[in-house]
Length: 101
Image: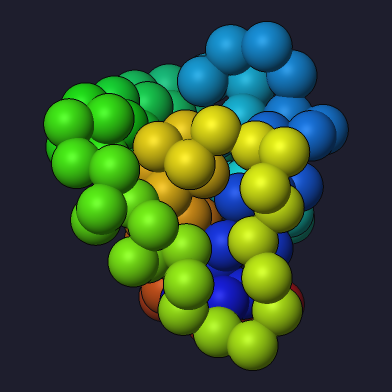
């Protein structure tokens, strides 16, 4: 989960303004290709669901962000970071990511 959080931090810093841009960057970094339109929609939908979940429960967001040895970036919104952490975990665990190349 820590690797997913670090990827999420990168997405929030470098991924652009929209959720779609962040989803495309996550997918491209992990699979070395652009996502299809459907893959992008699914990742954005997952992000939106997780964002709503963590926005409603700051305690759950903080608990997720405490996983791992490295500290979470406190300059980032916890609900956003938690949501993108979950999306990043999904992308990192795709068969295509694990068996890339």
